[in-house]
Amino acid sequence: MSEILRSPNGNGLLLTPRSGSHSICVAALEYFWPEIEIKDEGHPAWYLPFNERWDGANTNIGIIVRNPIERFRSMVAHKSNLTLEEHLNNPAYPPLPKGNFAQYFIFEDQLQECAYWLGIESILDKIDATEDESKPVLTPEQETIVRDIYIDDMILWEKLQNKEKI
Picture (cartoon, one colour):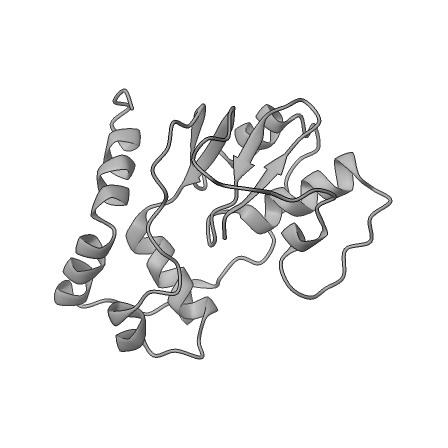
């Protein structure tokens, strides 16, 4: 997913799969564009009234960063048509893009803060969350593979956790 949710206040959010993008999109559509009917199929980003895609040169863009291990586990549960081994060999969702982001938000602690930054004043609902019991339990070896795949995401996650400057 490389769609950007650009709010009327000029702030944008690079939508990251399995990192709150569903909840943020629904809230934005309901708050800014209530006339748009959201069908119960596909991702709500499909209904955004514009088409801005990430190209690395976009300005004033925020990103939600999730623990890469948890994001991977959620991806495997969400994309259950592939086996865990297939995901380990070729993950459905790539690592986060590199870029000069205006804001970093931590999933799931800062989703509401992200909504406010976008100008959404309503309280977010948790939508399309993956239940823990449907997520795979990774062996230490599998977790190492995931860490290697998402090494830059792991570094970013740890810096955010430690409140280091990005």
